[in-house]
Length: 370
Length: 154
Image 1 (tube, rainbow over the protein chains, first blue to last red):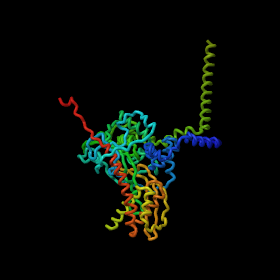
Image 2 (tube, rainbow over the protein chains, first blue to last red; image 1 turned 180 degrees about the vertical axis):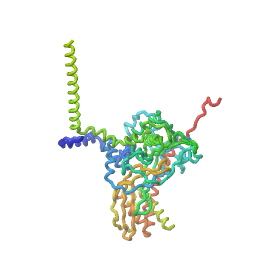
Image 3 (cartoon, one colour; image 1 turned 135 degrees about the horizontal axis):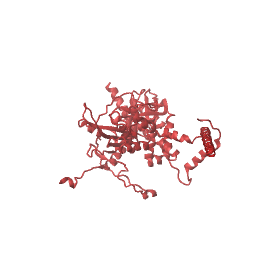
Image 4 (spheres, rainbow over the protein chains, first blue to last red; image 1 turned 30 degrees about the horizontal axis):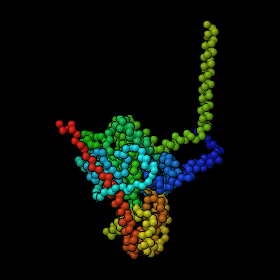
């Protein structure tokens, strides 16, 4: 039960002033600029945009600065900001097949059309701290190589074309559910589940994805394809009369290839999980694909019961803004709640001691009688 | 009908270049183009959101991924042409300039000048940036090969 608590205005004001002071830190050091955050903490920006569910690099950088690097706080700030803006419309579906590839790998096929390009990755680094980086200094420009104009054929298309080895998606243009408009209800269709996962907490999804690998909802995934790069965005505008190009954004896409399904009517084939996240968010996209596939257990008639397969559990707890709101609200004054619990506890204890006393009295009288 | 389709394709191509360029480069081009750019705002630049959609599996049914900030603007030239812009981000100046370019591109008197002085240099800069990106990416292409292990040969 909440009861309004008054007072403390001065303390709150001063606490916020202190926050601003420590956020700035030592004044003899240069202040961080948004450009620096955007450029040099780019993956933090990507995460905040993904989970903040708002693509705007500059705003994400501002949120990170304001939140002192607390990414969940930054995500919260971005979510709050978006509620102040009107929605103009929806985009045409992003064509990830037409992505300008910055990175594309497949752990399932080594020779796939377009080849494997590593791009900027932590993979194959030795995870040793680089003390030269502490000093700063010049970084030579990245090496280049002649670029062929190749089409990066997607692994899913490759498999589908090779005789139906993998399930195919049907590009139905049905009504698309939107969590920002209607609250989630269960069972949720796959479009809603993917929207939820796309804005879900990376750590939560990572742990769930990991749990499926360790046997809690096993479905043996391969990283069929991971691609990161830029895609063009278009949106139909009524007054213009056609789909207007809005510019481009970076996204990461993961196609997982998972174990088989088959029936008396169709031959066994691979199944798929899908992940898509803003920016270069590979761990997120991979986790999303694994959890997406786990949530399809019922659809494939698989044994269920593992946490990652429990749609209500996963989708209700994936949002870190909701989660942090509920956990952190415990910090707010609960004095009346606590007083009532205290009162109840005192009553229970009084009853306990009264009972104990009466038992002891009886015991004493019996002893005296014997 | 064909004419209309060509017109739409031309406008879309121009819009794509403008959307992927920054305000100061567009402005530089407009100064160089030196056309009659008197206009009134039909819609003053306004910041809002567009919900970005993906496709399940990359090619299946659409789903909502998340929103993006978008700025839109509309202008009308003294000669009557209306120009529109929707561009990612919150740059109101860029949106108005892009709308102005769209209007000037539709006006026969100024289309060539817009193509030559605004769009051509922007297209070249964009292509250079993309080419650099492609070349840096190409340098990270791998040729994995699997080794035949000894025990398999027996």
